[in-house]
Length: 438
Ligand code: 5AD
Ligand code: SF4
Image (cartoon, rainbow, N blue to C red; front, side, top):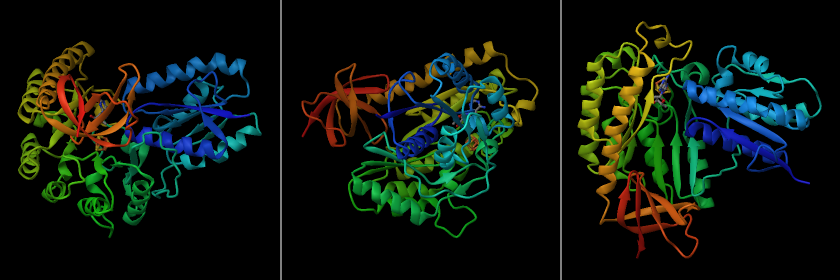
């Protein structure tokens, strides 16, 4: 009889890909995926601690499993992800949720197989959190769930220590995979039929820094030179490390999508300095100009934080002005979340919640307006999309164009994984609607 696993993922793309690695390990143990916790023999929570709401969300969900566990004693509950790597958090989790069987971290994810086998033979909880030893684990065997898209880690960890961010503390120092391993992985993914490859790292532009391996733009060139029709994306780029060479590389290699995620965080130089971002708004705008010079049609997306400690109305105005100047294709907007252990958590003048709320609403309005306008520009044009799946509710196929816009369309045959030309008839927010043309 089949044994089932269910994974709950919180946070970013990095975590989504780590969940694929967890799924790979569980399937090696003979588990099969299922869509509910009730049915599962093992439930894994892949947590995120970047913002408080993701953390609270995980606590809420783990708490809700207490009853189910009492009724289904053999069910294994495991908690991993970057939340468990935070100082003392594994012990706090164990105390709060003693019925959790396995607590593991991001640095020992590859040992989950041993932990599950061990747990099948013992009663006591297993709590194993490793410090980052600077090594790069190779030979993962992820069970990919996003065909035709595939995610490929190129760096792990981060050295930037932006003052608000917990990532460098929980994911350790930046380390890069060897380019030959990355190239081999992408080649085999393309051979398997994947059509979109996204290279992942907290700060991809500093790939291989301080080593004798090739720099990021060269890595991109080499990946783009792999035979076959596929799209190439990468994230995240830190503005301080974004170079003219990279802009040229995007322009010169048709497989690289004209879409760049370049988080600016704030439009105020004072706040950027306090955030330890190591660029000014003028530097950022210069980089945008360089990008536009080489890749005039490049869609630029960003991350923005409001309510950083000490942010005044003027600072916030500066952010609105910068957003207006750059005219982002879309943006993720966040309310600053205080993370214990970071520099910003100790700063005076934490901003009252109601002020942050007002600011984020204003910012979201502006960003949505820009997004709508960008979508509207596609109406009447024909755009190449890569079909990713079906929206069951809408009864339509869906796929993104190289600029990251999602298009919905009808098809009477299965076209998942195919490149298609879609004539856009209308746009609604971030979504385009149209029909397939030859
Ligand atoms: N509060 C709010 N947003 C944060 N981010 C990172 N840390 C925090 C925090 N403490 C956002 C940044 C980053 C994105 C991945 O998450 O905008 O670019
Ligand atoms: Fe966090 Fe800054 Fe590193 Fe991004 S670059 S992960 S925001 S410390």
